[in-house]
Length: 257
Image (cartoon, rainbow, N blue to C red):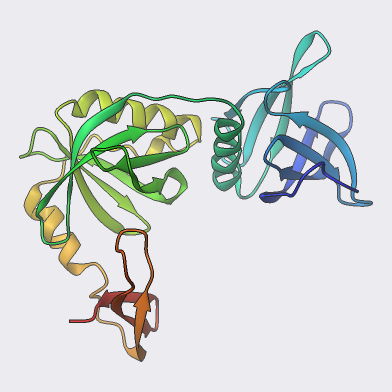
């Protein structure tokens, strides 16, 4: 059955009903709507447009897999309860889809991104509801850090404007004169996605960050294979040389030099 558009993501969920108990559904996220599908026959049971019907969502604080979605049906808002083993990924995808479907603006902060060599690069930071985004000062988009990839968010103890984000195990340092306000915005979005536990009040020092960054990708695991490759990225006008190394635990990208 047609979902009314190509699905950008699908998740197997359980609908939690006070009178029917729990039963399976598939959430399909299209560009314009949240579509509810019965997996027993693949028929669409609900089609909720983001701009009209999907009003809000909230993670449950009592159960790590449960969440609710507020949808407009007729003249009233209904709170529908669901559960999903991949709740974090689902809520992040839902937040992104809702933001893309509706005009959305967030304050941008003057900031600095620290490179691997700890040099400072001017940038603009945005605590977007779906990701931490950073731009060139002229507004050109550079990259983003998805909230569902963040495992830790810490202020830096000896740099009053700096903070460190661990994303997929990789530490990254940024700075902004309005650190407290920016971190508050990040914490609000992370909590909305059920990720409030990654926000740490324990500060990290610059030395600790540099040690962690140096160790990243240099764990002593047996090398299984190594390849010289070209990497294409919007950050460089032409492909750049890289090494891809296959270890027992990870695929590691390194500078070719």
